[in-house]
Amino acid sequence: MKLRPTFYYAFLTFVFAALLVSCGSSEEHEQLTIPQPTPAAKKGSDIPDEVNKLLTMHTCLGCHRLDKKLIGPAYKDIATRGYTAEEMVYLMQVPQPKNWPDYPPMASMSFVAEGDLLAIAEWITEIPVE
Image (tube, rainbow, N blue to C red; front, side):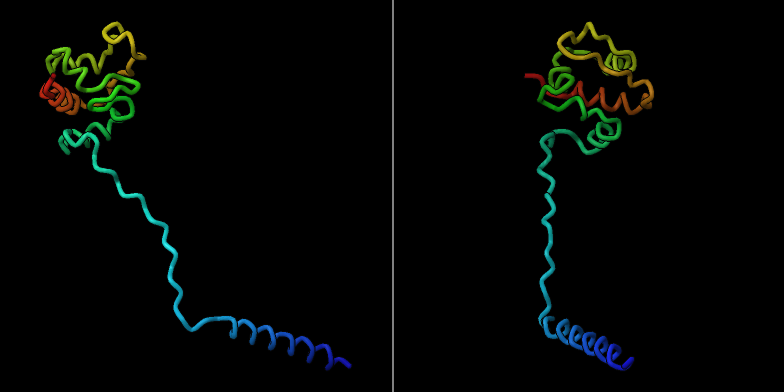
């Protein structure tokens, strides 16, 4: 009588395996791919690549855009103030909230290398003002 349950389980295993094989397809299935969003054309395409890398690396783009008000003023608005590059570097290191009362105070960028700040400031001074 012990042979009977063993035969029963073996038979069920065989039937189950046959079902699995018969349900499979010999055709290759197409892989479902989730389309990746393509990066939109840079809205700030007027920003040179080297400056854009600095702005991204130092998180400036989290608060500022070329021509759009965010948390901080737009770079074009800063350019209209007529600051020299050296003045801008100082104001980035030691922000003066009274200069921009309509915006929250800027965090000090004193941890950023002065050369990087100067490159950003020089670019801002070169932005054409309308």
